[in-house]
Length: 241
Image 1: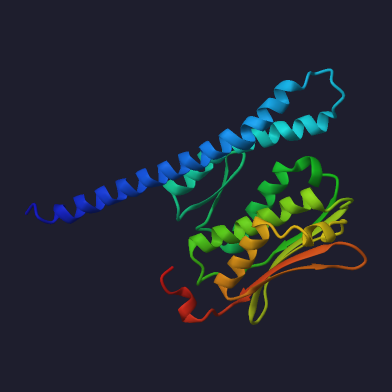
Image 2: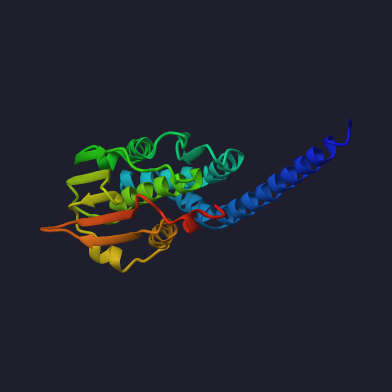
């Protein structure tokens, strides 16, 4: 009668070992961040006297970066604890990945705009999140798509100078799911020269979904980031996920 508990005990030990390894990786990652950029920011903030000629906005932004970097450890831990359920964002916000994809996108959009309220509040916003074909998506893929939207909106803050309007849409056509993020700022030249981690992640995600990622200029001014993938993905693309 006791033999069935042996596999269960072994599985439990394996899970505990995996959690321990994940915790070690999180701690190593956070230590690297803490000992590098966090220490630099802390020194800069402590060296600035209140009466020094530095803009309040710049100091506020550095303090925000400092807080967000320090929050990375908690975000990683929470996502590791519930890897199939949540997209964890800054500011103790999270998005339930069991919701339909268009709802996940709307929640991600709303949370990101709140996080960068000083940038987004003054500009015009057009958004439309229509239902999409998400039956073949795993929770991990939903999370990655949510991160793509978050990264695209964050890039507008960083690179798209003089932005006065953004348009964010998700839709399903007969053959494709399409997500577009469009701004009317001055940013494509600097973005094109900055093929960084976010662009690599978007390209990798598009490849995983069997689709494509494009960043193009729009007329008379602005940038469009588009992620699209087929409504019906080949069976082999869903193997081993």
